[in-house]
Image: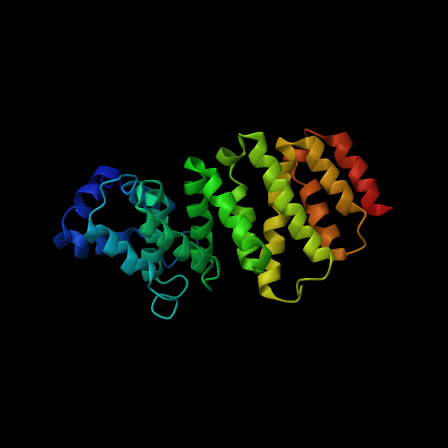
Length: 268
């Protein structure tokens, strides 16, 4: 990360609309795109500059403009993709301080990003939910509960990925909620409510294959009960998810006996 680029530097730039062109050029230059890994540090620092109740109308308009940059204009791995990636995270940082109308816009943009064809934007959506949840877990829980019944696989994946965030799992009630949500999704897969031949399902499955182990680690009694339930399933897709979580070191090293027990259920 460029050592000269600090939260205060971004904050100062955002106070003067005449500096927005320079700000945009700097972000594009620091994006690391094209490349395998965007500059997450700069994006987070930019977002942190919005952790304030004092966000000017010009600064809000700027991130609103950037977050609306489409995949047509900024496809995956194009440096311009970095602008909506940064803008969405800034919205997540700002949510706690924003007025009600802006809060609604932020949640709408977050849900849209969950369904973006660009995987980085989908990751940014999960990051936004994490930022919001760190200050107001009830907000993301309400969002999950309201969208959940109609959520598509990409939205469900965003929920799971957002909850698989250690700062959100310090409260036992949050962990139990994450397990409950995971169980609902796994029940839907078992019931054949998802087409497993789609890319969207593959993305969801990949998320479940690691996230559930984080929840189980923090609530082992309830977590292993959940894994035991689904280990008995004859659905190969479910078995793959259970097996993948059992193979994670966080479970295999700390709970070897339980992992072996569930493994026997899988092979029964």
